[in-house]
Length: 494
Image (cartoon, rainbow, N blue to C red):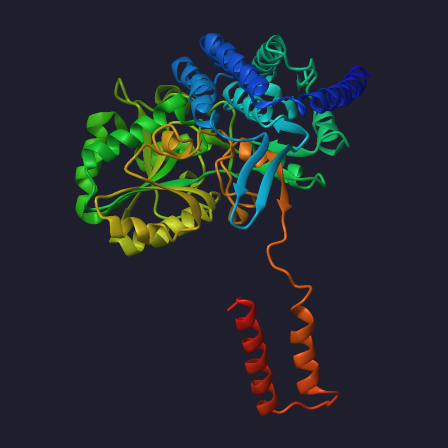
């Protein structure tokens, strides 16, 4: 009975949040650029001031990742994000083509629903709230149940900072009584105009099935190919830095390392030198059994954990200071557990004959749960980059840490914690999502060609030449074409 009452209360809370946020958004839609920028700046300041405490809350509540890295994420999702989106035009006339006399006017989408993952529970909430308000939208957040407290706290900070700077009350909301019923209610309620979903495949699929526009992201299963011309020391350093960043909880983190036979020993030695531990086949089996539950779903106990924690749980001994665990795999799919996504400090390791075989392997790995997302390549050969650019992904990350590169921290990509996978990955966008994805665009178009006087002569020429005949000869068609071209030249259209 108590559970039933709780579910009813959670659904009612979701409805109330949506109704209040919808009314608030109608007011926010009237704000000008200066007002919106003032609000966003105050939200950014609040996120910056609370970056450490929110990171601590997230680690304490979920057990995932590291405080220092989650602190960086919180700052990246606010301060760095703001610098990127500040010049974006999201209000009023955002573009004018004076030659073709077309004017574009931005309008907000309305009320957004933001689904937040447990792996990045505060940074993703901050990011979604900021890009929502920048584009004059309201947003109601649905947190992951295992990270509800820290996500609620981050959302409250964003709301209070926005209201303090002049935003309408209730413009940002968050479910405090988390339940699937509440999440489903938000997805389907009339007040919500668009869903931004970041989370597991099932949740993203549900968002796309809610009967309204949605921006969702699929999983990443990023292969990292160290090509023969690569700077091996730098490549290994980047991979380890990426995989240990917040203990691998970013979906753009590398999942497999691929090397050619001729450089295998050198790469393995460099990994060992920098803190990598190559597990034996039996150790790999023990770790894999602990990593996954229900087939290929990751165990929450192993997500975002250090190599030491994972090794201890599997009952294997590793050298002090080990940063990542690597297990050799001979194939992809069933029977090769490390070929699946692992949001933690474990990597699959593959050896191939040449780049052709590396290409084939990358294709298989991507289709094993990461299609559309990202691929990483370390090379000094620009032609090789273009060969791998043919893979079915929308982020080809070159000579950088994949985690930081995919979200735009170490690359020129848009700073984002929602990385679209395009239609290949079942997503409505292939972009890193920004405020520009959260606006509707009106177009004012002036007439620039006068058809009132010239359409009739062309039509008359057609009917005069063809008459009412049911059959038309090639000579008649050619004569018609010549006549029409002559008329168009007189008009100056050709």
